[in-house]
Image (cartoon, rainbow, N blue to C red; front, top):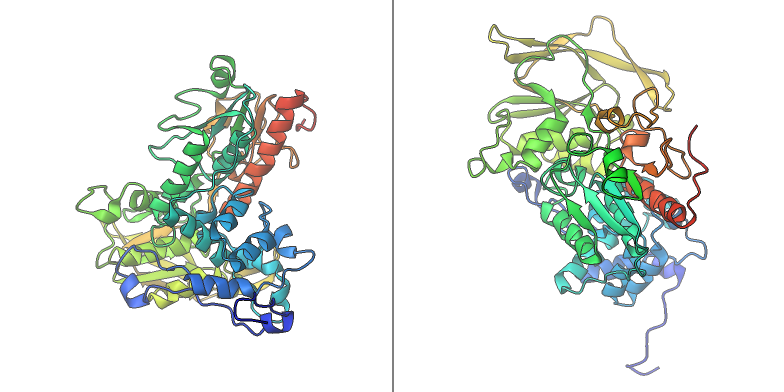
Length: 486
């Protein structure tokens, strides 16, 4: 073999000896004082080395673990070959938002959780590699746009520009349909913009991915509140849309329903994060968007999911003196990503696990001064499989705080349902849709994502968007409306 001959491929025995590549991170002491992205992305060498760890399984389980079915084996092989642009194009065949999902997907419980290598070693860093090729593609200026089919003349309206709506729009425009996405707020992106902080998902990344979709032919309309500006019936009857896909998410915040929750200084994570992320409250005084001042205050966030982590880490960056995370179960039961909990601890967040608020206490001017909590212990597993927390008698204590942020999840916003009389809903107010076809009780109307399932992850919503797009395309071709809920 001469010096110019290609190197033989690595054996599996050689591959498993390669350690998982570490994601470079901004230093914790520095990043807790800014909103710059924490994870810095793999280098070319790091990405190529990580890709070499892939065993190239005959039947890759990682694909079945991905809600949108990314061809992981194929795009990783292209990284090994050094063809990063083709790798990005391969991902875009199934995922129109790779730079986003590469940053915020819970890969550890999905594609990476199914990785064969993970049985004995650390799984391949699929999310790291997805982010790498998406960022490489963007930096090159050579975006690999999928080819659209010839125009069908059919019009599809998508309500909501979050992950479900964007995913459906990307698939449908490729099938030759005319797609318009309606967004109630002034910018496109839904929860990707208002719900996820800059240090986890820079807004320029979301805008970049949306611009790619514009280049593909998707039309975006902002400041349109479906149910107020225009109704579903008006879209279909007066504006000539053949199909409407409702992907509004579940944006109505849940609260604790305990005394003192109406005090000044107590509010929802939804409002807090929207003011900081979308309305630019973090950029005060350049942007004078009001947000309850955290500077020099003791702040408590109640909850254990990713939104709770986002809120408490944001409060810390806004200058909180002490930032507490109050969660009624143990850390092992936290639904938040392991990486987010790790980053929060590194940034000085105080975890108060097995603790539950029972009342907020205020002064004569109705400003929050403290929270009364009770210690909890874990009993038998509940319906979700997690051990159910129960109070420990006599364990109540008070914690001085001046700001409380409730991050207990969301429920269905009733606006679309209340203005569409023949659209059936569930007992909890979510839109009733067939789980396979995502058809609703109203002909021509589909629904998917959090407005059907309740709050879930970005990638699960995207999976629903892809499923809806396939079902919508089939309906537009056949005109048949079987498989809808009774």
